[in-house]
Length: 238
Image (cartoon, rainbow, N blue to C red; front, side, top):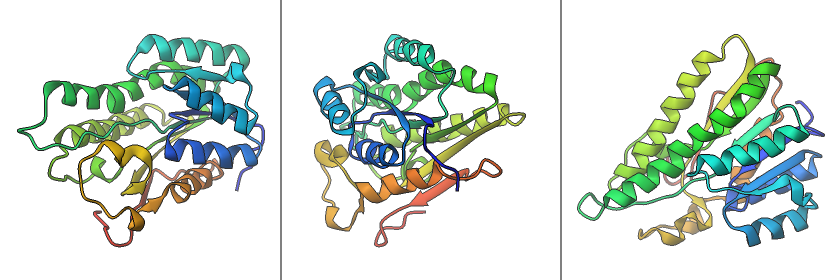
């Protein structure tokens, strides 16, 4: 296992259920954290809790390239590159086709796919200059298997899965590692706006999902965990 201490770690979507739990674990392990979120109040509260300097926290809407670019420029003025980039952002719009609007579909793509593209455009080149780094995305199980009502969500997550695998092919002469985590149902606020009957008491807990990310951050650079699947025992979709 490699030490996380003093590693420069960026968590995008840090105030979400999984992002916040991951930030806590990595801070306890001595990581130098950079945090982004859309909600400034939640971001400030998390930064205060974890004693993360305000100049290492950024209000970012990943749908906006300018937001991502400004944060990246500020971060790269402090460190030459990020050692570990964790993309914990995501929006879930689950509706049957007759209820799914164009706005719903585009929102899913913008947050889940285009936002990840913006992150790669802004943070990958400095990693390539050092020829090292770890990038973790969370496509979820719907990035591998379909579900009724998930046309928009699966389109964005299948796209994320494919994009990261394609980028991985471009990085084979470096030591930059890419990991996709395929999470099943996880008990986070993600579900608060989704009109589905679910058994949240049987879901994966956010802290369990965070531990899987924490584990991946400590894997030796001699190998790569290209994929990880973590899903509820009673609903194993893949």
